[in-house]
Length: 97
Image (cartoon, rainbow, N blue to C red):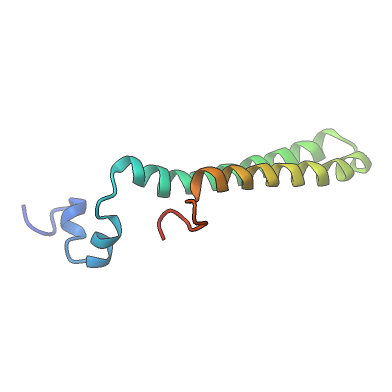
């Protein structure tokens, strides 16, 4: 099989910046530092939007808006705290930097 056979290592063989970026990174490290981090952010956004829409649907507008502000503040704070605790290194940089 040649360089264009569809295998990832064959496709990226001519891209040294990718080889250097992922050199020495195990699948587990890549999964936790890159892949799972983006799915976490996407999931948090989805939960925030759905919870907001449910609050607006179930409560009268006069009660929903005052309840929405503390709920979103608390949800965003907890999501940010969890992100910083699990997806950033000790020096404050993102895992891939």
